[in-house]
Amino acid sequence: MCGVPTHPTVRGWEHRGTTTTQHGSRQALCAWLPTFELRLELVRTPELDSTSVALLSPGENTRRTIWQASERASIAGVRPGQLISQAIALCPSLTLLEPDPAHYDATQEELLETLSGLSPIVEPAGRGRIFVGMDGLGRLYGSPSHQVERVLHTLLKIFPSPLVAATRIGWAPGKFGAWVAAAGAGPGRAVIVPDQELPEFLSPCPVSVLPVDAVMTERLERLGIETLGDLIRFPNPALVGQFGPDGQKARAWAMGERIDPVQPYYRPQPIRASMEFHTPVGQVDTLHGALDRLLERALARLERKGRSIQGVRLGARLENEGSWALETILREPTSQRDRIAFTIRTRMALAPPLRAVEALMVEFFQFGPATSQNDLFGRANPGGREENGRELSEGAVPTSLREAVTELKLKLGFSPLYRVVEIDPWSRIPERRHALLNFDP
Image (cartoon, rainbow, N blue to C red; front, side):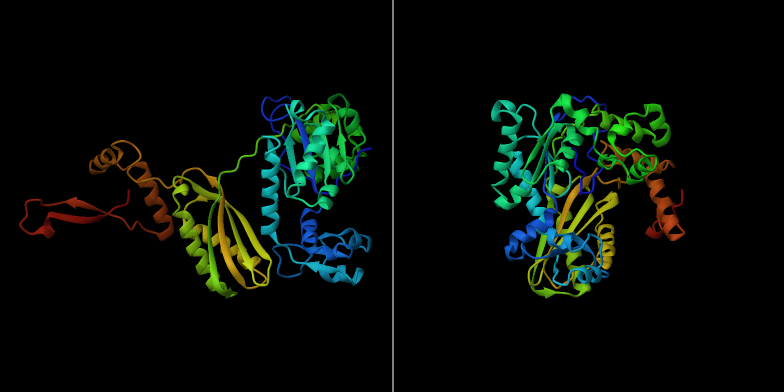
């Protein structure tokens, strides 16, 4: 019997190539710990484990909502997305906890490092869910059931036994099959699906398990297609006509023909800069000034040389424990401090720290190509500066310089550049030898 995942499906992990692959690991194991963040908080305060507890959504300063709820709170009617007032009305004894994103991210990184010692191919899929490539590990650890036991034993290195007992394990060909198997597994148990049994295992599963847009699953349910077995009864051209390429991929997943391998996880070493405050800071202007300093330090690091910045994470340690984090992906990679600071400040205005800040940290975790700002006279090319300079003296304007002038004109309304023109080089009066003329190619 296929279980229905209660955790939102994360798109983006599915393989975008053909159904047969030569890269990654075909055999996949999915380790999933539901309500990962709330369980970590209960490990910190075990006395709350027998009470009704809810974790507040991060990044909100008004109209706070529920992010995750414990089993006792769920029985009382508390649901994710509810306002605090609604949750307390349903469960007056509810204990509300502030989120600690820095702690959750650090635990996720520790989990990745630990499982990397078991298999060289590990791929994260959001907090609390990790895919492990198991190809070739049979000679080391034995049968699939023994390999699952080895994974659970490895988790005991970083998690207490109650968390390991709550972890769900799914083993199947490809990430999709492993995820569906983990979602249908019980706490502390594993569902192992051999290759030949994958289509039969997927057939009774609801279409909501497909890693496609929610609008597509809603349309399928309206059409009376409730399970993957119902989906494969439709011919491929009909699904493509209704849903495009997603329809073809969904049918391939449902039939067990599309096998998405576990891809090796690679992340470049992040660049961090931090600052401690002598006294907790709550003023926005002070935090903005500290942000500018941290960005200058991080951008000046040697390991950043030759790379632009795409992803920035701002974190803070708050007064009286707790943390605050803000993450942003820039539309265009840049190495300009002001552009990065403007984006972060805008996000801070929407979701500021809830308490005074004791320490502030900036991290560059995603990098783009080399900065797109080229030298005007092509310094990167051998002799480029000299050759382009000669072209300029002969009346030809380099393309890069022409584009720079065009941008300045669009911003200022005129060209603020001038060129030196030789008029009377033999004059005894220096001011008559050269003149400045407006440069507007």
